[in-house]
Image (cartoon, rainbow, N blue to C red; front, side):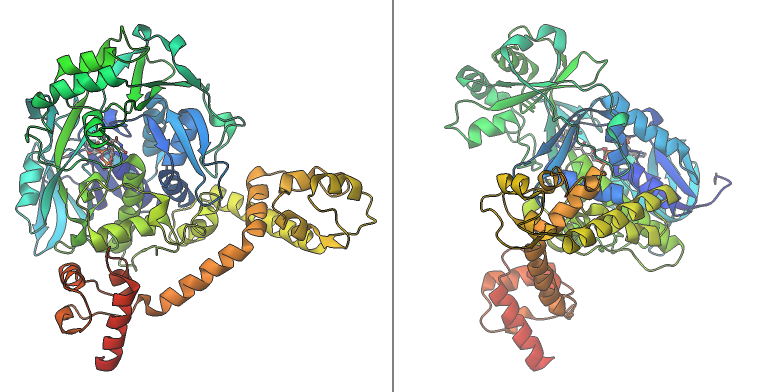
Length: 623
Ligand code: FAD
């Protein structure tokens, strides 16, 4: 039976990718259906209750700058906020917040339910309707068919999911949820390259059984950082501390003694796990000389007794989990509420995707989130938004929306995936971006909000707030350039106290802020010079634009140079072996990846600038 209404876009899966995809498509005016297993789990955090961090926080700000949900949801659900790398340069400063799982999920659910043009339906999607390489709809478990112009698949760790605890294993999408078996079988029959990955999660502990008095307390930052450009501290719920404890040699001995029953070390699990979020058994094996590992003891929520011990993810048998947990300081009497486990699942080789996240083989079918080989809510949300936008644009026969590497971490993420693929769960780091001085958290709105507005993602309130901030920044920059302090100025004594070398000639306020020892706030605190702008986000922007102007200009130059060859085309059947001077390894990599442009070729790992020069010389000669 066909459902009576036809949709423009259908999104399958109500996780982090799915909710951003569905809301983006609906914001753009498309009639959108979000089809998910269970409406209660919309926006659920499968693993650690936290949003952001280095690289990941950048993605969240970008999602927000394009009108997405994640940053606002964490502003409503965050119970501890911190700015990481606060003493380092602005490029690597990142916001991270501990979440109350329930508040976060409720915030996402609220936004989904209030979104115009968005319809919800609870059922498993078991099949896709494909007519001559074009997806035209989906079929649910009970045989109900929905028609649409485009479909976005965001089913996370659920495809062919197998949960492992020791040598026991069973099918599941994550603890407490069913796997997607019928859909996995259907997708495996299509011409996509499919492989297995794995990820894991620690046991959850009952806070009442822990001794926090022997752990180190870690408070959040004050004043509390805010995630969304539309957020405020007033949105934040009560803030609470986290704690820190450590594993010890006894813990490591217990783990080693259980490795013969570990699914990872006995070959039961074949999927590759996340390198940067390894299980505790992985850590003690890979870093055998370390006698201790840090554990962040994170509350799961304001009204929850559960605690998330971040750092001891494991799939060891339950008796080993019990023993290892109880060997840790403060955990001696711990009660495990939920055992830790690993999950293996199908993912698709993202090299089979276009930069829009549409699959190369089935028109109108988009993939986003963990199924593309990534790990993390933020990476999923970012892809979801891009896939949702492009599905909506395609449904309207409009040009695609592709962000470049110099425009956004989202561009870096998708370009990395589509160009290089991944052999292990991919997570974002600032080191993956070559233009990270431009791709900062603080200017995500300046980079993206106007682009979002153009395609209908950004509402009037956000647009007005953004323009007001831009105006304030621009006016203040003008004032700082045009206001001068002469050595005879009334405020000079106060000013010289703050400077390494007293001023001996006239200086503009801009020049003074450029001095390493001076900050915008310090200068504005001087009577006769301040008070300056009151909006802290605008003040931050003014300071960064002045202090880093030289570096930013240099990076813009580099981008202009790289862009000259970025779009130079490489023929799809190009025979790289005929270029003399290229190593066999480079030939093999280029032949395997078949990059469409010089830009893409240059980003394949192992492809050196020298190899690119040889390619360019060859193309010029024979082109
Ligand atoms: P999900 O959040 O998994 O959402 C998928 C959604 O699709 C769910 O709502 C599901 O019900 C729905 N769905 C699935 N199949 C169907 C179907 N056939 N029909 C309808 N609906 C369907 N990330 C980290 O960054 N660090 C970690 O340490 C980490 N550890 C993890 C450990 C475990 C055990 C798990 C399960 C995940 C872990 N993650 C970790 C990953 C993180 O949870 C995911 O990256 C993130 O949730 C992916 O978002 P997503 O939207 O792609 O998928």
